[in-house]
Image (cartoon, rainbow over all chains, first blue to last red; front, side, top):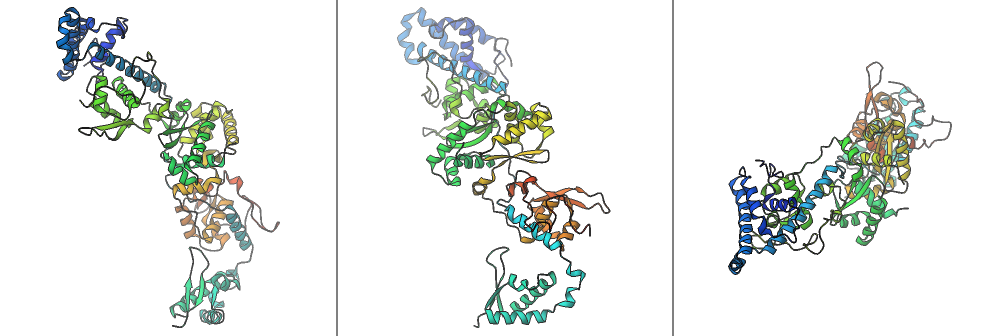
Length: 237
Length: 183
Length: 183
């Protein structure tokens, strides 16, 4: 695939007829702005002949440009051809403009290539937050929880004194709570626990509440997750 | 000393895994679009001489590492260097400076079929489709991507290297009309 | 003006998806551990008054957003505020102040079974396993995570506030022994 005259020919494509023409101009150290493009017809054809390894459809693009160059050369030799040819193919100035534009593109491509080779690129953050960690934890609440835990830990354990089942009765507790809501209409779970903040007391109180709720004596309400539970006397229907 | 707004914008851009639009930034930090612009400009200026850059593609903004430290970052990430053939670089140069552009327009400039190079560039996510031109056949338009800006260490398209060409003789930079409509 | 080394460290920490050890940083930026320390200190100082912070957990380093802007970040990410029960908060407090700690030790302090709260905290990635205690049964040790530091806006565990208790009543910060060994 790589012709001896085409150092820019690559596997995925090739630089094409304009590139070949531009190479000729640069090799001969000519000025794109003033060179008579027709003068390059012979040299161009010689190069195209050397590109025989290219697929046929690619060769046609080179031949199309070659034929234009030959025509430009013919025009310069036989000016009488000019009026006929001008209307059908691009003029020398149009071809020159294309070549100039292509020269700019090639320069920019080279600049981009240099930048790429320098390796000076940017990197963005990839997957920095794959799983969203919870936000807005309150460090003072954490410290308060720690303090509470330490205070509790320094107290003697109730389990060491007496088993909860022996000390509290669900029936008694149910009656107590029923009396409280009869009098006060509503009470919070925290208030119910405040008299004796132990685990056994909390269990018995909770079971009593479930029983009262089942018997439609009370309504239970919680405004949001982990908020205090509100116990309300059920209104008579 | 940076403004609180610039810091808020920085925090949000830091956690964002993709470019964030100016409108979204304004909403999140609770500022007007104009205030957000000021904050972004302030942020961009403050990254001078640091390991970070504020990059943007149109109205979308993203934090990236400074190109000067690409080597260290690549070492850390074990990233391979991107290789692009000269032919693809030509197509890429045309798309970058002329975007949005159709394949026919690219081919008119390069004078060769560009199917393969466009396919390769799309595969490497250096260019992407950008809608269609409202013209006969509604040809697909192509533009460059965020990956393009990153791979070439550009903070925005304004930083594209300018070619050293004879002035006034050739069509200038991006946006200038180019010969050859749909082939 | 920041040093090139600090900027290189910043670039690497910026793209890192997890905390990077000092040794790894030194290797990647081609510096000695001592130079890396200096660069890290420089970086930490330069984040004063910005939207970013340099956080560390022992020798592991990570860039995080400044806690002041957690609200904006949460708005962008659409993340929930932390919602844990008082029971979970207590368990979390014990793990935070006493880490590494076994479940039996947590239960000895709280006086209740902590299976559920430990599970919940693990699920939310606020705590994690930290190896095993060299003791009969080789119980699992628990410690707090990076997410924990981020969630509470801490740059490191050193910033945990002291317990709010009448002085002399309870032992101070992390490390002091607490009543009740392994149950």
